[in-house]
Image (cartoon, rainbow, N blue to C red):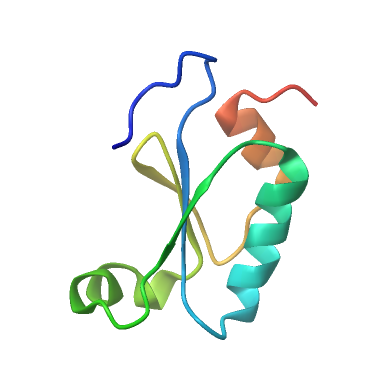
Length: 84
């Protein structure tokens, strides 16, 4: 599912849950960056809830946890190698 994108953009995944205001804020930062990202709602999935609930939102880049709770726009662009 995840792998290197031929365009050179590293795969980004946002783990979120229903009613999470911090998740909505993180989604906005990712959307404004213009970098494509996948969203995974952990709500109701026991395995995902156990892995991610206490850290939400979680942003992974290339399968590695890069941000929890808050996504700094400048740091995000730097980590994904996006042009600013």
